[in-house]
Length: 132
Ligand SMILES: [Zn+2]
Image 1 (tube, helix red, strand yellow):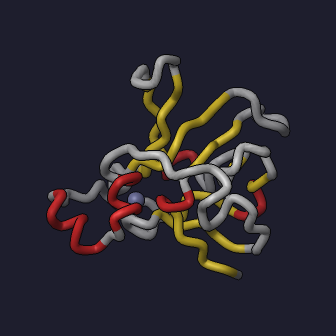
Image 2: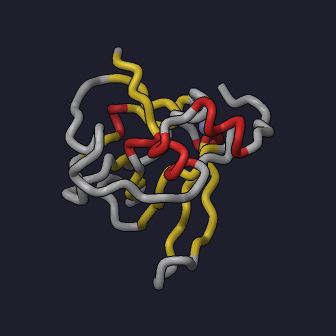
């Protein structure tokens, strides 16, 4: 399900997100590796956007990347994320955002397993797992 983009102010977001969720989703922050909720989670379910509830990643596509962040081979649907070049961190990376609310999720790298060859490296703070 993809709904139209959401228009919200920072104050709106601050009232609904935790400080860490706000820092990641709205401030493009990065949480520490191995000290976040889902990096080592193997429960079955759908990972939703912590900002808007969009279905972003399936546990079926999650794999152990060794990076300390939850990692996926692909999003639940191509339409639910947007990808943009990001030159802000000394190297070129591709930023991944939620298509619906514009929240920053993490980055995608072309070194993943599987036939797509992609690794979506996502902050746990941007996600909320709906267990099956
Ligand atoms: Zn969202």
